[in-house]
Length: 586
Image (cartoon, rainbow, N blue to C red; front, side, top):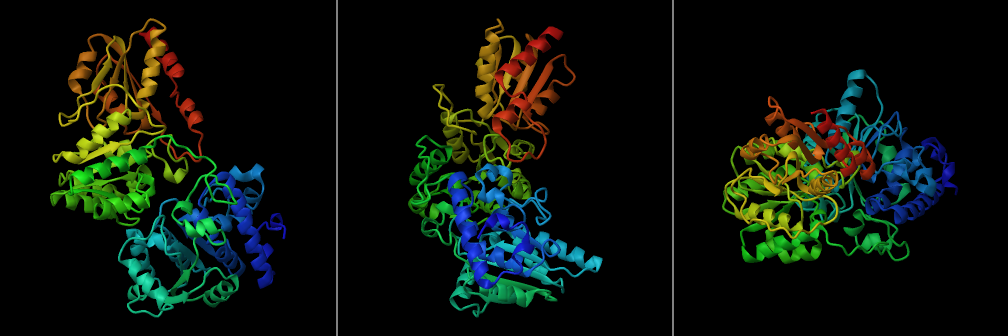
């Protein structure tokens, strides 16, 4: 079977069941070939192939609308909807994203990278259809891991009230990124063990019709099931059990590892790159394990992403009850941490930057207004982090630093990060976020304090005049390089590590007015609402020129970090040129 002959779902409509099985096998092999070369979400997509084939065989996309949650399980769907060469031809591998994307195809309805949103989005499509008086099928495909998120509960609760066609497929592979956590999953287990007949039944409890499919990797079974609910006149849940990593033994065995992985050797499953360099995730997990061993009140919390913060299965076992996974539920994690802090323990919620956005209300209401002294290390907050449009890590400075009461620290290197992390957990006065440096681990011979309770006191690491460079966090290195480049032109700049993103060192900033004409700020985040704006506002009515360097407010997708930095003039040579030009004007 030539996969490149498949240009749209219409090309599979006349196939026999045997042809559909052959198609599924060919797609699985093509996926494995591509993913072994490029990396990506391996397990979720291998388990979805038969389901995607059956969906497009039975339903009539894009008239019938399919919404994937999380949409990293959409690779087979993309193969069947005009994007096959992006999975069969190495020359085209980079042409599509890893998530549904309306800019790519009329068969994609939303750009979805965060979990638990699909039922609500699809429910909105169903409501809009009813208001228009149309009759197409609306299908939400939601992974079992997504069900732990609060929005999924809300979406299911509302779906039961629609009274019209709405097909909710729960793709149950008994796995989130890591093993599922939460009481709901006990009910899913009972449903699996009872062939869908156990009581209570979560889905029936919220008022939804319910049907169970024990083996969801059989295309013939799925065609029959989907045909039976096509054009149904009320909301129904299809609870379909699939095998994560189906058809590839290493992915079936190491389900957590193969949820998402870099390039790997196809025959063995071994990573192609054995990078032994230090990583901030490992540094964090090891440091937290030390603190847990010394203090039984220290706890590490994750919202369903233990691997992203360094807590491998072995480290989770070592931490025992001091490691808490609330499932993919950032709001719960933040509010839980607040309660734990008020209860006399020392919670440390480690979270990915783009996922923290989901808990803004809890950061403000549950934590900051209540002055709960939680520790909040924020990972991948950087242009050098994840680069999908749904996972951008440059909005957290504007988000966290502008919540009253929050202390947001920006370490410049490994040693400063460890010092700030330790203090954030030991202190009991403030909610403290620590921005884990982006990019490669940087070490420094500078000495760092173990107490940051005297807030908003910046560190002057090099004293000069005329030009002051205030370089925050992982962009401190750019500040160092810029200062060195200016020195070649006879300009001895002042270099400052601000340490605090959430406040101003007003005495120091006032002192600079005496013998400085230009202040430059560097931050690894969006400029609008960011750290540099605070500096610019301080000098607003004063004769000080301020130039702020950071990231433009935009949703960039699959960008090249070096190219983006150059476009934002975030290079020492470009910053130096701007400074010299500005000095000539003054």
